[in-house]
Length: 506
Image (cartoon, rainbow, N blue to C red; front, side):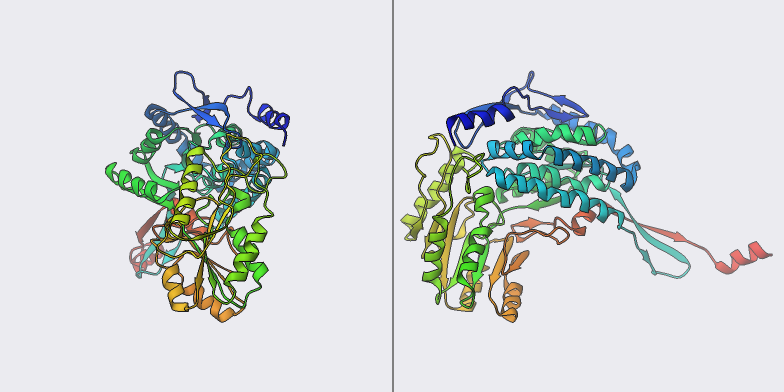
């Protein structure tokens, strides 16, 4: 991609545009507020700024959400669904803009970001369908009484999203809370806010004022959301340390808050010797999300555990396949793997690569900075390590980047102990042609979401979430829909039916 092409992408999608927050139906820019500089991870150049919300801005957003909530709830599922339909139309119309903003701001390849936007349509259509089919229950708890349940929204929901799929998360993650009658205060990652602020314009057109409020900023804004006494329901996607901090700060607010946390993963891919090696290699690379978000995904299968009978051949074929991937500028149509999100994160990933070498792992491919790319870009050639052991940092810590560790195993029991030996349990995958072995192993793996002969794909309607420190709650399913509703049970004494008959019939 030439310098002219780079400049053209920035000119078309960034220059001359103000990125503003959305509070109570009004757009709030940077006037009289501190700003954060936004840098293009493909070049390192500053391209724009975004406002940093104060605690007062968050308070105003919560107040707007509180004011709008009763009328939003009163619309019912049918009325709220019409807003979803309009929002879906606007998302489709703005597909290219949203994808390019994510490529420019986040570093994910634009081709993958178009797919992210397309994926959102299943959620925009699916959540209203789930909500329309939701019912309460009648309980045969005692004779002469009526016992039934109903659901009510919490009111105002606080949502903090992650940096790695900015537009997709800003579109899909709020939907279950909105369709159930809650209103929203959402904060995107401070590192990748541009597409969310562009979506603010679409939310404002499709939803009544105050239903969706979007603030940007760092720790102050996030902490104000978490501890605000008017927000009873919180949802967060991000790192384990931040998730633990949110739990603590929510408890310190003096309010009992209901939380959903989708946190980290150091996910095992278990490969048995009977597999088609080429298919398993493709699955390993696909499951790392290299050509989507450079391995910056909590669901990536970064621990690849391969049986000794096919280990050497597997590593050799995987290295050859990785050599075909083109690392480049995120908004270049030919790029397979873009830059990581920031210079700080690039240095963190590089530190893990140095650690792997120092601790005795074999760097089979990558780990360097590809030549011929902008000097300020945050590029990392995907690294493949062999001879990794569980004691190494690259074998046990979440790197959140394009670093793959291949373990050799021969004992089934030892392999399971290693696979389950971490305090993370988000996803796992099992690769074998033996169906009984596949199900037995899937059952033994301590992870919340397990694929057999596949990886990383999500299927709307199936509960996604993890075990141990990886998650609290489930997403993308009826479980998540119900989690945004408080459960109420009503008991009615019907009285003595014989007395009623006597009174009515004389």
